[in-house]
Length: 86
Image 1: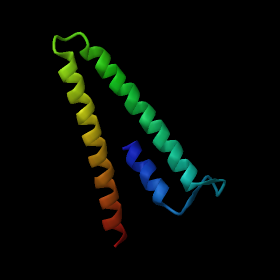
Image 2: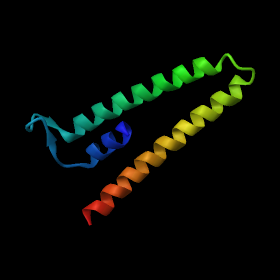
Image 3: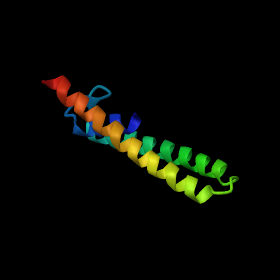
């Protein structure tokens, strides 16, 4: 969800914190935090999966699922935002 919020903030033309920080920079910051949290979560999952026999297959599946789900959440959030503006 944070990734979707960050991409939405990049597209917005508003400012944050009483006009001190533009939405472009706050969006980049939120995207950076979201990517860091996603990478930490994937690292933890890969570390736990390394104990299993077929850990390489499970790791590829986990990373593929994360990429797919992140793209879908961003797409759904942007579609919801566009429909809400009409």
